[in-house]
Length: 151
Image (tube, rainbow, N blue to C red; front, side, top):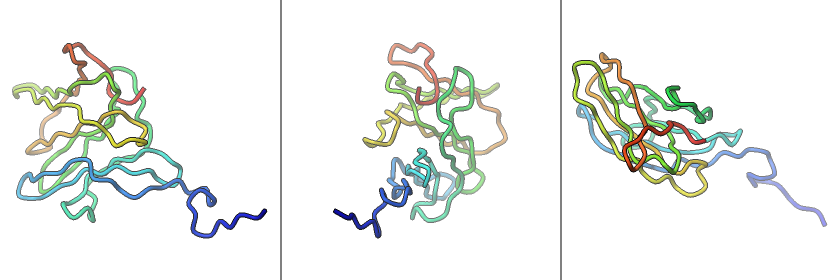
């Protein structure tokens, strides 16, 4: 029995998926949407886009597994002069905290990722400018240090 593969994603080796909106908001007068999708290689990708999900501000694919203290997240631009940090998280992460000298800490909750994305949770946080050096710490439900990333 022959199987026709025309137009089927599974037959071509292309494992890409359509973007799914994870979170959205407005900052510095501009709308933003964080989307997740898989690229042709099947890697999990996160991309910060405008409110219409057309223009990309920043993003990344794959490489999300990490040891404590490594950069298993994207630190990139958003609308205007804003800076965003975002990335996938393990199931055990309850929140992500950003700290910087002379600034109040910023804490955001971990949010559930869509099923089949390859990660249990994600975080996203916005800052008014890119002038400050922030350090990110994942925390478990008890407030202890966890790991950024997915493994």
